[in-house]
Length: 280
Image 1: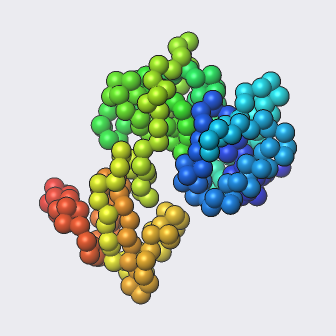
Image 2 (image 1 turned 180 degrees about the horizontal axis):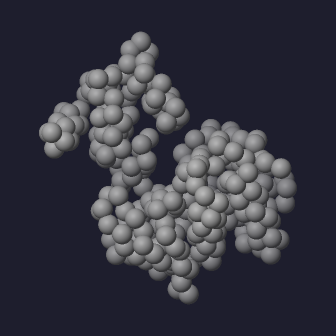
């Protein structure tokens, strides 16, 4: 039977987030799940109420890795797999698996399970033949995975070579190999700032103010539902949003160049001009 209740889906993901031997604090969980403080507290109480051994340490939370917890988590992994495979477009979109063949779906889920295991056991992994858009290359990466994005579209991991925490898209993984090697840089594991358009950095580099026509507004909230909280005015729609880079929002604006006016940010205007000039 497909799982369709959004609260059930959120709690499943919350369990998987907290089971990786890494503490998460309240602001981090609120940001990850785009939920209120009250909602997160209620979900944490739910976990405690059903028997999970929830550790609370100065406002940070994690689930103790007891034998009963491992068994429960394995069951939840199976439930989440069933969710992704059977619940239709609304939930499978979390993994961007719509339209993919069953064998491809299974490969993605197998890779995700391996990453879950690595996080739980604090193991390093090899991401074989990872297809990177930012570097326009295919390469094997040695990383220390420590978390997932809220929709489980990406893995958060510390990459040894670049000495940075980065996002790695689940659907760009060719193969995951869990190494017999423990984390060596846990003190560097942290979630960088991630903007509305899924671009990450140590902090935001600019705060843009855009004026959107109705069609641009409609497309924005359909593709990025979290955008509603950044809309400050209506008729016209004013988007005021911090960004970690111009790549994500740039793709959106360039696709709707006649329906969006940049009110604020000279650097972003220059970025768009350079992109348009390069296209010509």
